[in-house]
Length: 283
Length: 357
Image 1 (cartoon, each protein chain N blue to C red):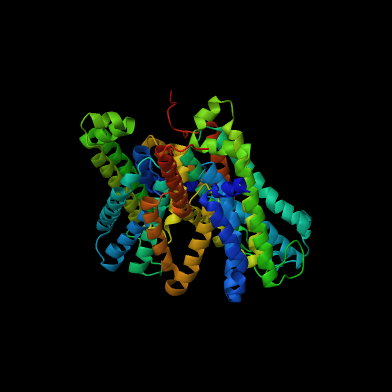
Image 2: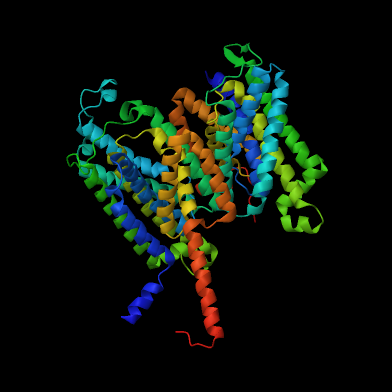
């Protein structure tokens, strides 16, 4: 029981990480909270439905398709809300407006009925008494891969260096002749693309509907509050923390109580660590 | 006499709108069908709710994405009270209860239920306020946490099968207030309108008091207020409690108006739509909250009769255009225009060499 819950928790953590990472990158870099994030995950899920279930193409194409379609939508959103930079309430309202538009737009195109996506890799790995579905391993691997690639992108490439520079000091970076607006758009596209990727990977595990976005949004938000917005490893660690606690409390008690308890713990936590658990102390 | 007239002329434009709106609301039921009166009753409840968030968001700058939690708490307490008064509900009988558990007996008194429906949302706001505002949590995190709270509240209500009938909610409730008999439709409308007027006057009094001035100072420049020796956290918590109790009151009124309450009706959607109403009307001047709520809700009622839920697509586009072209909202824009005109007139008068009083 204990080990089973532990592995289930790792899977949940991977799911949480995939859902939140795009949001964290955008929030950390541009200080914009993207309320359409959940809807971009939903778009990724629909892309995977069309590519894998309707067109019967290999699943890997669905994942890339989700990334590109959501990234493209994200780029459009980013270009439009660029003018609102630095205005909190306005960006929240604008991205909320986009979430409504995407939601109803998808409903208009794909219809109001919910869809199911076939799990591309069936079967279960038996480790003693533990049951680990193969697809869980896929989700965990994808999460690790995204973590690795994002780290490489931020730390080993030129654009990554520029992204970190803008995050540290926007005005100074601008003065050094770097096109910060271009950097912003690259970041926004990458972050929203990751939302689409998450949607494509998670689609086989959920019912795909136009209204599915909002549940992703809140779980990602809790993740952001715990992990802070400064580092992707903070997000990864807080995903593990939240994922494991939800699975364990849910396993021994029930899911609703797990959510309420974890939320209360987070409220108490931010009283003492407002910047998130895994953020270095600022001077 | 002349002096009094001048005083009236100096009133900001939105107070005239308030008077016009209230007059229109008094006359409204005389010209429409009963169905429309019922719809307007719902809007009146939402106006109380919108005024509560305007205190918090418009005047203090705290953008809560989870205000429906406080609304829903108030509503569910009263709904449970009404349900229990009718007798042991079937969803509790099904769970093996043969009589109402002792913990719930206070709810058999409508007066106690009413007090609880205001006090519990206030208490929730107070606890959240203590934890969130006392730390150095920045504005945006307040929004994130409250949005998560709204989602969790909805999940929580869905899971309360025995007590609150889960996702089907509590229905079949009477149109009565504080244990009275069933109130006729017209009478109920005017009672609601009276409550809206009282709440409006209360908000007006609150924001023109010293307390209200501090709230607006928090919105404008919090660090400076701290330097002046105020403790913004206490004021933030206080206004959150007041706003929460008003939201609870709106929830209480919602029950006899709509006569059913479900988790979906008091979930994330209501929390975010509430912000849209206030944003469309314009935040931070009370009138905007009233006008925006009436405008968006009626647009919703009339459009969804024609194009069902796709009206949300229209709403999304309208909000987007609004944010870019009229960020201060409809009423906010009018106030700005009046201010600009007065400013220009003063300038002209000064140029003409007249003495300004």
